[in-house]
Length: 479
Ligand code: UDX
Ligand code: ADP
Image (cartoon, rainbow, N blue to C red; front, side, top):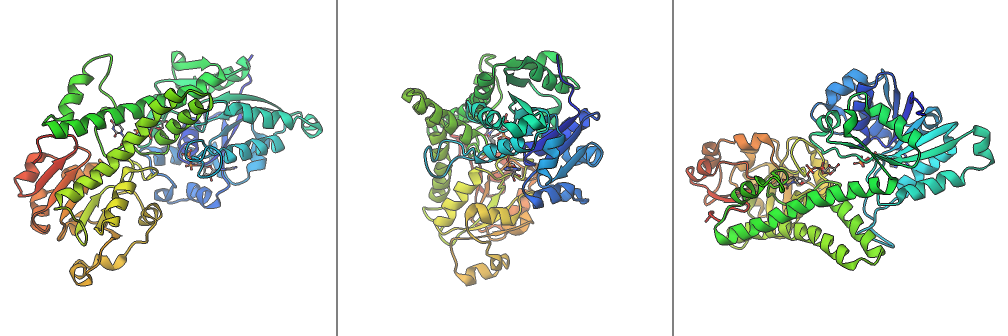
């Protein structure tokens, strides 16, 4: 038997909750969906009439929001009321890595998941299916179940509330979230109650072919999410490690990637060498896996996966060191133009972005950074760098007079940012950066000027012919 779902509440209006529920509402007009959050500002942004003010940027999101908002999709802070009316509650809150206490630096902080479970226990009125959507450490469902069941007290009996817990990890990738939600490789549903799993499965069947909906036990589902991210991140650390070797030996990592990618057992995806992986999931999920393996006494397993993260950190700092070395061993007082701050293109998300470590290193060494990004707000960069924007730098002619070092400012116009620059560093693969006119750039910069392409989006010949020095990640043929 499956219980038809008419009303959904999603706790957490973030990168996962927002787009996922927007697509669900679009594909299932018969279901009413309330996305709730404790953060009033975030909810206000989701409700903003000006769609450029939505709290996250995702290609295609605005269009879906226009079609669903205030029809069957609502954003609100009325958490209790929305839970009470729901047949199904998705938990989509943040689960950052713990910064202190037991498991600090590795384990996920589950306090927001716990708080959400308590809210569900407090407000649910009838049978409620609780779906874990956030990426969670394995066996989190146990915690959620305990909280929900332990509140199976007199109050709950009176309200006739009972619960089923499901795990339904999200595999969407930022920047292509809407497309990933429309055409998922698979939908994973883990749980104990076949009825509850069927109810969730029925929702997805509105647009996902049946054979793509996989049912597993709850622990396999939770572990599959961590494992998928660990495998993907591992590929990136692998190719970045080989890239460093290419630079040393005269090989080219793009050629190596193409050659190995044609092996159908390896495949061609996720073999782009870059500045190191970022994003909210990869590092966090691997560290979760490491913590879990450690917990079960599997030291070798823990060490194996931890190396993927260590290699990534090393690689990011390697790029900063390389920039300094190419600029004659010092960047103090030199102007460096940073192109891109988000962790990948087509998103305004900067969580764990390689740009953070690289910019911090350069600022620490005294560089003056002019940072550009088409979607990231300067105030977010200030938070990430833990250093205020120094707006006075905007007056180009003042830089030399100011005799300053270790500062940054935001520059919307990339050609203005090139004025007197000693180096230009591409850190995010935004399309507009591949369209730069290097003839114009060459006339603006201070020579000798170095162009660093950590994303392989620039055409080497265009740069070299304009009397600019060129370095590209994993290219052993750059001088
Ligand atoms: C990832 C997973 O792909 C997704 O399934 C999961 O749900 C969440 O985590 P996301 O972090 O949004 O998604 O982006 P992804 O495209 O995986 O990229 C992660 C990082 O790896 C980015 O910094 C990206 O630039 C980098 N990357 C990716 C590379 O350096 N090379 C590649 O070949 C691919
Ligand atoms: P993710 O990338 O996992 O979606 P985000 O940080 O973008 O993470 O979003 C998580 C959202 O969850 C935030 O907007 C946060 O305010 C919200 N949140 C956290 N805890 C609760 C809670 N107990 N009740 C409601 N919303 C919550």
